Image 1 (cartoon, rainbow, N blue to C red):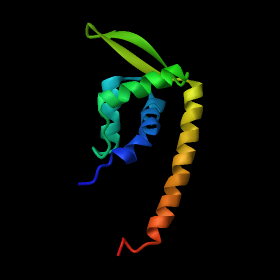
Image 2 (image 1 turned 90 degrees about the horizontal axis):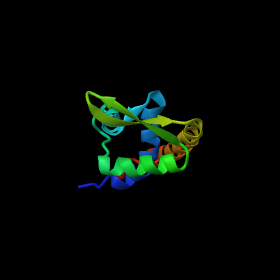
Image 3 (image 1 turned 30 degrees about the horizontal axis):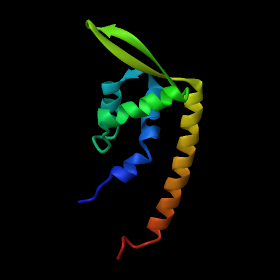
Image 4 (image 1 turned 90 degrees about the vertical axis):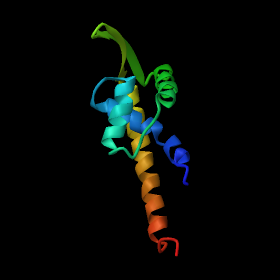
Length: 112
């Protein structure tokens, strides 16, 4: 069976920022949005998400705030302008690499 972790590893930052561009979200909501928007083809566990969020906060890409919802404390994540710039750079690089990979693989007759 194919292990897709290495494919995901290079795109986690991009997909997390992609969903946060739309609106502020809390952790589980981010995971759910990624799964829903990918029709279930892309999932990340919370254990993978939180180190990414903490790194983004340290780098100034995100900020967080606490909110009480239904008597429960939730931490919402907000993308800052620096994070939007980083997102645009990541997206540009992803599209460039993706286009290159497509050119290479389309030049081959499905591995036959």
